[in-house]
Image (tube, rainbow, N blue to C red):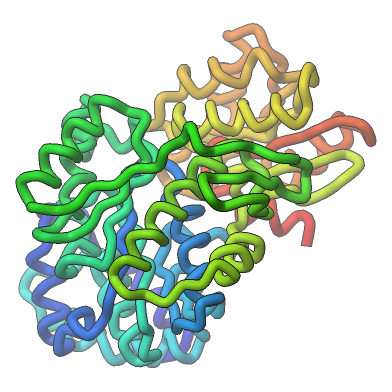
Length: 420
């Protein structure tokens, strides 16, 4: 099996009709000899900020001298981004060989694994073969029934910022959504929560107590923002002074406070993480398509915000860095998202929209999205492709303007490719 054949097999796995649950993942991993049982994990759930939090923690642990696996989704430019060791993505030949190894076991199952379950099993085998000291493991969706939740009690479970997303699968109330995320809280473990959502916090506190787990959260009163620019921002938090991250979004400071809280938990458990490792790890964090500056004159930013909570954070970051300015937006959304709420947050800030159809079967068509925006009183032009929309937005923004692509992570890779 070569690389393209491996990807074709992975993406061909049928998931429709599959009953949610962990039984298929457990069966497949069992056939592989349970590679996950030889690994240690940081398990990360939440609605927004999971990826950024995972990237910061992985960078810090790598600076501390550990061999660190990182499992995230979705990918931005290449599938291989989903599983990395010390910032290096799985190689094409490695992925092909591992898929070839896992395939007979998957094909032998009466209840076939879903695509995400198959990828998770491949990743576990990959991390085992790379002798990872620890794996930063991002939940795909939810928590309790997510295939990553087959692991035993992690070194620390982290629950990032909470909001409304995937309501069809997880529930329509915050209590229901938080209950799904709380599934990663395991017996006698440690959990760090983002907080700032009383309804969700009540669920996490209850589940932590039931599981006899220790719950921690950042003290945001100790978070002091410093300077910020398109290159990044500095901040202080408690005894930490003048830390710097290259992540521009205003919301990233809260994510960094969550990371520092998790680092303290890891230190208490015996992980050797020096102050220098923390400082350098934060400073060297790389995480594409999260308020990422792709161009200057005009400024062009891509952000993966795709639900109301995420779009609100992006809007606040734009207003902080460019106060009083109007923006040119390249926008594409999934039809099953809360489109009216998302648009309501950015229409008042817009000079013009260029709408696109993200490369996903769930995407809303560009012309339909443009009509929705026009009905709200804003200027919107549908485009046939993402490169056309990016070029049009750059031209309309002019040298002194600001353009921003947002609405779906699925279009972020194509946006980034326009500048490479």
